[in-house]
Length: 193
Image (cartoon, rainbow, N blue to C red; front, side, top):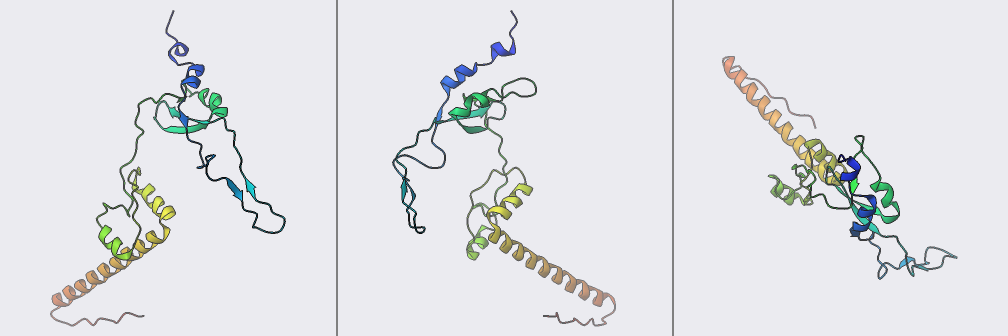
C-alpha cells in the first residue's frame, strides 16, 4: 500500500496523549490570589474569595511549519489539532517540531546597545531590551505604542538637531555667496520668537 498523508501524520489521539502541560494563564494559582473582591466598594457588597478552581488544564501546541508555540485549553485541543492547511496537512502538533521561529534583529531605540543610549540615560529615558523586531516600521510602531513619551522626546530632539543643521548650512551658504559677490555684505535677520 502507498504511504498516504494520513499514514504519515501522527493521530490526534497520540498528540492528545503526548500534550505538554502549561501553567494556568492569567497568573492564578490556588494558593495565592484568592481574594476576588474585598467588599469595600460600596454598600451591600460582600467580600468574595475563591475557594477552588477546576480547570481542564492548558497545554502547548506548536505550528508545525513556523515552530511558533501557543497555549490551548484542553477542552479546545481536539478542535485545534484537527485544523488543516489548504494542502490538507495539519497546522498544529503537541510535539515540539524543533523549528526555531524566525525573529527579526531590529532593536528598540531604547535598547542598551543603541549608539545614543548615553544621551538617553542623561535624559532619564527608560531602557528596553526588545531586540527581535522584523523591520524599522515595526520598531517605530513599538516606540509609538510602548514608549510614547520617550519617542516624543526623541523626535523633538531630532527635530531640533535638524533645524540647527539647516540653520548652520544656510549661514555657511550665505557667507559663501557673500565671498563670491566680491565682499558685499549680507545682513542676517534676527529670528522671530
